[in-house]
Length: 189
Image (cartoon, rainbow, N blue to C red):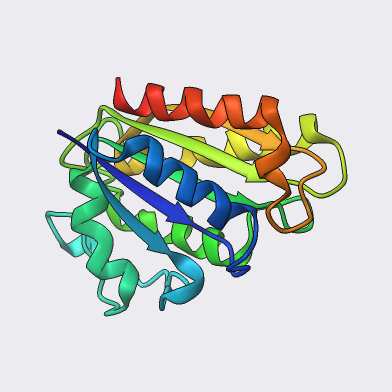
């Protein structure tokens, strides 16, 4: 059974990320082992840029917070799904901290700069934008998702649902929900 890690990057408990998290849990139920990590409810500190992780031979971090405890899950999963709002044309701060902490997977002695145990994983990023240019946001998401390659995520898909600011509004957007369904199937394949 596939192991899928869902990263919910929203602080809005009644928002679109939580609504879609529930939908993905239903779609994946019985088909994958699902672990959900809600960044807004966890202690994820910014990277210290101390390079303490570079003295390790496995992905690790000298900080002892909820991200450090999640490193083995990140390393061993088959796929990861990120659910997040767009904040000021970027990743929300808590997701940026999460991304920065994947520096703990970087190994400069490797040709691919990665000490990830698995380097064949899938990553889906599903983002919600209230206003603004969806194409620009999609480009931003794709650019940032590529950075997760250091943690072994080499195949990725991105989607930005536009006009999705009102809490739960994603559940009435048929085309965007179809993308979610397609993402679930792709993550399982």
